[in-house]
Image 1: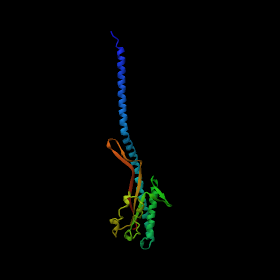
Image 2 (image 1 turned 60 degrees about the horizontal axis):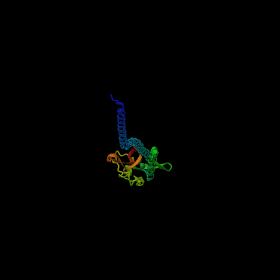
Image 3 (image 1 turned 45 degrees about the vertical axis):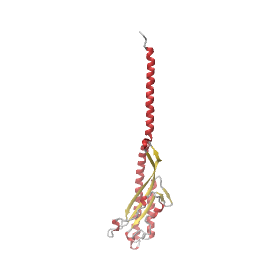
Image 4 (image 1 turned 30 degrees about the horizontal axis):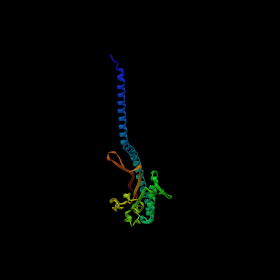
Length: 224
């Protein structure tokens, strides 16, 4: 009877080589698929991190705008009590603007892109503009032309600073009119990585870099 062991060994070796080639092929395919998916995974992970940062800095910016308006509104009450007839002077309005901007800048201290100068500090970033809406003073010109005067130093991306400073219906109704301070603020948020027109698989593309956060907050002066 012939010995078949001599024929089995070469066949087994060929089978093992074929199996190894299939494994290598699958590994190569997996590496190619991973290389295609990796950029998307990185963008998703960094996007989640940036969303958390964006949300946190948006809260800080909103608090800064509100605190600036509140500080100026409270000072308005004190100034009105000390002025004859409760009518503020142009110097008073200048003072209120300075108080609002100072309080805003202090509250924005935790923002990474904050740029401040002077003592007490005022911010070049975030950009801000202030208006004291006061029915007794009439319009913006009667207030010394100060409403939104800080807008001249802001970039064009700060669109929140552009609209006219019009008073609300409640503020222009003489029987119930109460003065209030309005603060508009604009901040440059920088993402973790900056890419312009990044080309992704499947014909996708994405551009990330800077996002401009903008807020508009008011605080009523309780001059009852």
